[in-house]
Length: 289
Ligand code: C2E
Ligand code: MG
Ligand code: MG
Ligand code: MG
Image 1 (cartoon, rainbow, N blue to C red):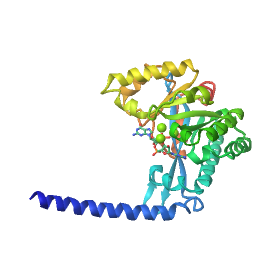
Image 2 (cartoon, protein in one colour):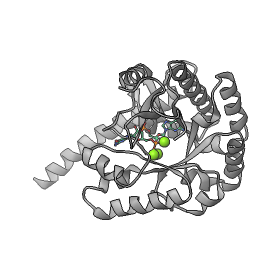
Image 3 (cartoon, protein in one colour):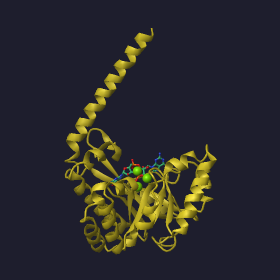
């Protein structure tokens, strides 16, 4: 009986595994032509002020509209690109599309801060600062409104090159956020030595808040520490009212998560902006928190 069960389980697993493998091979084959086939699209997730709920920014999140498999999240295909020079072209497209969108919202009367995720390759690419500088000139944006999100593990891969790129971006006026803060070694010296202007507290802390009181203590501590360094603090992954209220009580500046808004297409994001009770530009000093 147990043996039968085992065999049955094995058969299912094997079919699923084969299916997954087939799908991965298909994705790997298609991903390198997805850019030229215009199958990539940016979704935008709102970031709101913890004080008054106004939308102050958006995080651009890459999606792939696969003709057969539908809308795919980056975890499914980005790793395939990371190891290849193709990531440079995709990264450049993400930067351009995010700038174009930021300009469109600005013309609509909303000056938001646009957060763009950077890949490890881009972070050590000395062409990234001139590329971005060129884009903000072309789209007539204030570089302050573009925030690049990097992770500690990316920095660790080649800290000297990454530091040079970040300093160059800082000189040009761009903002830099340390993403997924608290998940790695949380080497605090990066915050002192690199031109980081914001930290994003990882959603793993937010998730645990309801079960584990210490998580809130940690977030409180991190925020006090970040404030003393004059860093902006964003909390990501807020899914419940309880989490939202707990995080708001810590003095965190900006909130992001499914409760506030899921990543959405630009049309839906525009509708969200227009539905805000505050009239355009009433949300405060634009992208300056
Ligand atoms: P990330 O930068 O940490 O982005 C946050 C991820 O958490 C996003 O997943 C977002 O959809 C998800 N998220 C947001 N709020 C919630 C919530 O309340 N609950 C839960 N469970 N999840 C939430 P997504 O879009 O699948 O992106 C995954 C990762 O892929 C990103 O993590 C980022 O590292 C990377 N990525 C996304 N877009 C780009 C891109 O354009 N370029 C590069 N290089 N990486 C990207
Ligand atoms: Mg991010
Ligand atoms: Mg994150
Ligand atoms: Mg991440």
